[in-house]
Length: 102
Image (cartoon, rainbow, N blue to C red; front, top):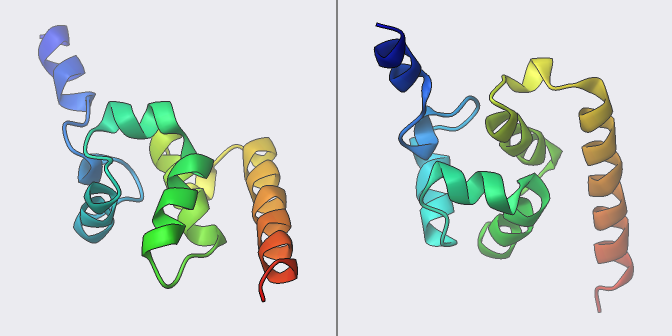
């Protein structure tokens, strides 16, 4: 019985992860991420950068949603230290991009 319940907890598709839906799953497919393991190995930041190249609109909420999916939790309960670090990284990225645009 334990083996059955353990198998039910393992997400088979990206859309089964917390914070991710079918639309984001399709966008991840377009950037070459089709498996949960690939997302986890790549990480939230690298995945965000890949999505940023193909999406017109990206924001810190997307980054936090990816991190929550990888951590296996809803974005609202993302560990505070991780949340703060990602928000800081995103702010630096936005600042860098705005400074380096023609």
